[in-house]
Amino acid sequence: MAEAAVKEKPATAAEAERELTDGFNLIIDALKLNGLTTIYGVPGIPITDFGRMAQAEGIRVISFRHEQNAGNAAAIAGFLTKKPGVCLTVSAPGFLNGLTALANATTNCFPMILISGSSEREIVDLQQGDYEEMDQLAIAKPLCKAAFRVLHAADIGIGLARAIRAAVSGRPGGVYLDLPGKLFSQVMDAAAGAKSLVKVIDPAPAQIPAPAAVKRALDVLKSAKRPLIILGKGAAYAQADDAIRALVEKSGIPFLPMSMAKGLLPDTHSQCAGAARSTVLKDADVVMLIGARLNWLLSHGKGKTWGDAPKKFIQIDIEPREMDSNIEISAPLVGDIGSCVSALLEGIDGKWPAPPADWTGAVTAKRNDNIAKMAPRLMNNNSPMDYHGALGALRSVIKERPDAILVNEGANTLDLARGIIDMYQPRKRLDVGTWGVMGIGMGFAIAAAIETGKPVLAVEGDSAFGFSGMEVETICRYNLPVCVVVFNNDGIYRGTDVNPTGGPDVAPTVFVKGARYDKMMEAFGGVGVNATTPDELKRAVDAAMDSGKPTLINAVLDPAAGSESGRIGNLNPQSKLKKK
Ligand SMILES: Cc1ncc(C[n+]2csc(CCOP(=O)(O)OP(=O)(O)O)c2C)c(N)n1
Ligand SMILES: [Mg+2]
Image (tube, rainbow, N blue to C red; front, side, top):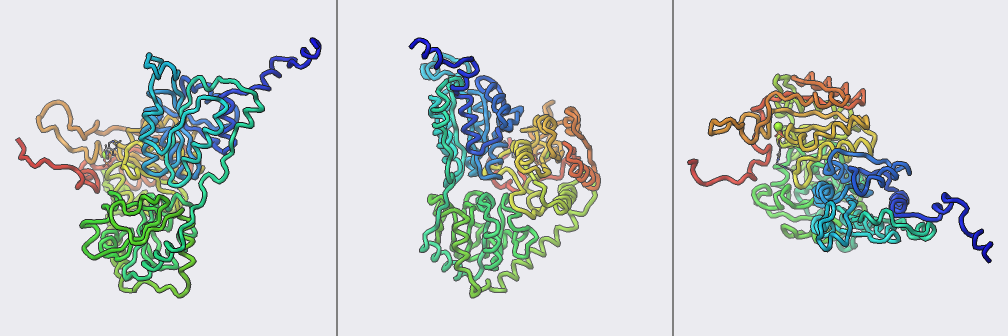
């Protein structure tokens, strides 16, 4: 008996370990099992060793300088791949730093999972003052699509499965996963641990639209005299590029891409109404929204922007509650975009009537007119540069390199670049999205380079850049093919404001004059360039894109060139009182 018992014991400590697993390993195994092989994060207690072990096990662990940037990276990785991007943070402050990105991802319908380590539950719940004490789950809940906590190693598999499904199914969004420090070192039997893992099958099941809803949509579309299709970033996310293109081309209807849907069909496509936006919104009689919401970006579907003529809306969205959010939707089409567009295509045969030629002709004429008016301004080689001269140069860069990814934030820098830089391929334009949030720049640029391997051009206002600028070190550390262009106009909107009191503080919108952002990149071994003309700018960007070396170009802009809040100055509340 005694002998047999001795024999059953493992001979060595190593063998004993092999039969056990723990939280660290189970989380890594669960991520890998589900194809989540990149983590964006910042190390610290209680997740430092987890990051090390994940790297050792073949997961790509990209370390950032601030969690918000890691979170933004995870979010845009989710948008680009349709798999949830993973962001890893420490407890309380690290978690809160990541939370803005999680909330922004949810608002923009990007799938991501914020995984944060957390402190001892028993101490947190009794509020006894633990290291980085915070009830993170409760705080995350209202700011994301779903929030879960795993307390037992045996539940890691199911916990991650729930997080993945919540992030990508239906309308995608941000999910919070709370992992208390104790969980990581919890030990369990290895075989039972392996069995507890869950591979999520069909994480975002197709949602087929009802045939009656498809017929209703086709009937409304057929009745149109002045139809318009609006493509939103939901349409870009769907990766139903061929079907969407076929629908637009077979129907012959002019289309208007929202910012991140630019390139789904080329902006130079004969049906693109991008340069005739105000005309088509005002004059269309039937508008089909594909993965675009009637939020502030589309003036809520009513008011001056939309003109007086009565309009009917067809809306394709996976979220039923999106319908009638702002105005009546005549033909709601609920389902995933790929399935909805394919169903519509079946009803658009050779007998489908082309839209009236007076409508398509008017749209084309307006578009060509606006493009022709803009053209000379884009050719100027002024120094200091204005927005049009600088963006004219960058427009040529993207035309020559249509597979490069453009990241864009700022006010004037954003609004003017959106209008001027044509996009040619889907999901190549990444920007501030629904909230118009500053700070996505370097996080988006890093993840775009990592996830796609394509060159990235980040066009950044000098204010916008400041929100994530320290990540140029991250760009250099991982030697990423990212070229950052800082539109340096010495401030927010303009660098010309003055302090009306005559006191020593500068105006709140003004920065250090003549700052050299290029030196920041040089500090970490990247290439820095100071560009003062559009020609210099073009040459420097081309060199950066050819070499793939981390580059930052300080583009010297006229401080007076911009306008208040770019294109959305009308949203600023005005004091009705006279100045004292
Ligand atoms: C997180 C966040 N904070 C503040 C703002 C307000 N805001 C909008 S645009 C902007 C910066 C605009 O300046 P810049 O990036 O230099 O662009 P410019 O208009 O000068 O080209 C700021 C601070 C915001 N949108 N998001
Ligand atoms: Mg600026």
